[in-house]
Length: 311
Image 1: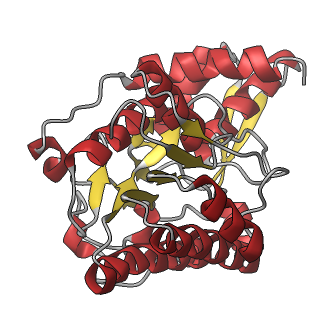
Image 2: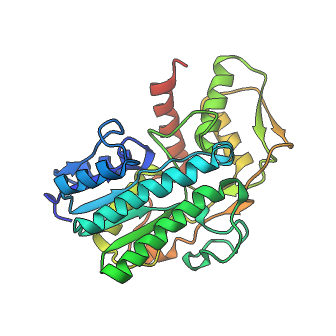
Image 3: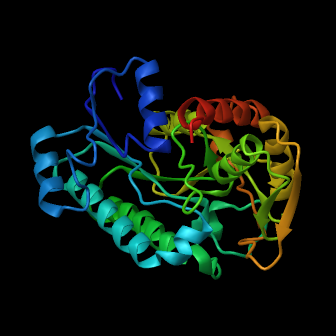
């Protein structure tokens, strides 16, 4: 990408899209295109087609998606599969029709089987059954991956797909009903602290292990890959280390200053027992994450307090 290349960031208000936008601006990219949901409904086939015809972006970062945690995915599975399929179909197909030079599609680590060897290599895709609580979302993302690969094969496009691990950071979703585990824990412990509660009740056993990547590191990897990677094979983006949900809860408890106890509700599901990505392929291209987990947690908590402190 040149500094004056026309770049469209789909989903620029979300966790990932906002980080990509910050990264591009910091690196001096000036010809950036982005639209709010009110300005451009990505579920509307005709409006997306008109947008691409009028704007003619050269590069596209597809970070637009309906996302959520276990509860949201399990409760609203029809919404998750329909909206994500529709959004990515509109963006990918119109990128092809309008001669986009390169597109980066954001997948997810949940596309991999529930049970597979750890750390997870890219070739494990479609090698086993998905986690039932989020299979609708995962299937939509797998369809996006296959769509990019198919367009590359049939039409000679340059559409790449990246699989980030669990993400966190500024502009995350902190709604307790549909957020991911890390932002949900931050909000739970914060509310427990300001309300002087004796305990925080958390789902499951705390035993599952997860890998977490600060979203600004992800954005840096995406821009790096847009400039340095041109293959159809998917590529993982992670840090190569994981932590148990119990350990995560203790860290967030400490950072928030909550002094009560943690109680685990064993009647609730744990989800996938272990999920950590093999990051060696990305590292072979020369990219490394820069932000430590503890620093990332502290920055995320500060952002949450600054933006949600008056709950």
